Image (tube, rainbow, N blue to C red; front, side, top):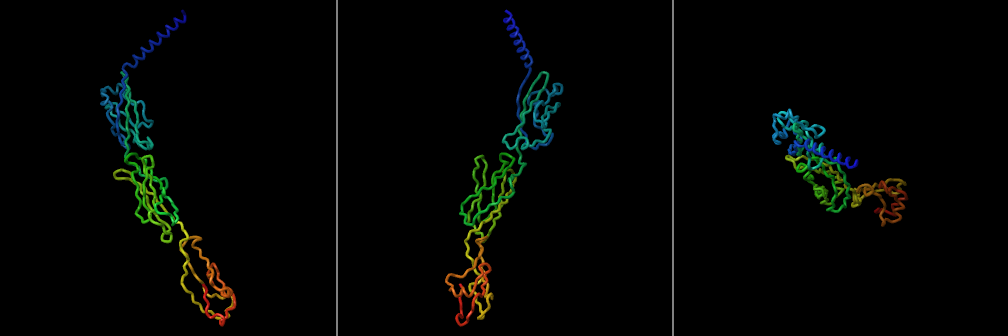
Length: 321
């Protein structure tokens, strides 16, 4: 009997609580409206008339404590209790508020009392073209061998723009030049990735560096842009032969010239770079041994000196090849 009485009291208490809650929320009204405003709107800019759109009596707003009870921490918006107007209180930066996400909105909770009403207001922040495309680094360096085949592609940096939609990066362009083209490919995220394409064979001896400028542009009107400096260094291959400063060297030498006497100096140059451009001198294979016994050739400087006896009667004319 005692347990049955306790259960009956519990049921009576629950019914009373449920009835009280129904009475408490009987006059509670919930509605939701949506506004849109551009970012960077100045403080004081009108978003919308909440009271009018909700059908509230403007004259009662002050007594009913018409107010915002939740929203952004920075109090970006306020309501006027005399007019019911929602207005900008602090300048809104969409990129700071929503990073680089496509949609950006702020949800506000507005309350009026006696009777209690709760309304929800969503303010969508639309983008303006207030950011420039930019590259992570200002310069990009590439090294290409001069025998690189034409048609080869080289990935370039992708520009980033904090704006969204049409105001984000839309296309790229490369300054006019003879050796390179620009090709764009789909990155898989709706963006385009730029690639440098070799269209003409490189020749280091004609130009060992190519300075290019890549420009990224957004879709704003007028468009904003950012640039990337590209330096292509052409690496050498051994594609040039040494060339002497003259085809023939003619020298008159007295007989019995002392050892160490300089006969002449051969000079040759090679247009290649580094070790490929270093010249080493030596006698040709057809030079007779007695000639090599008479003269010595410095393989570095190209100097030819007497190192043996020079006899006029034995050799009036000698060819050193």
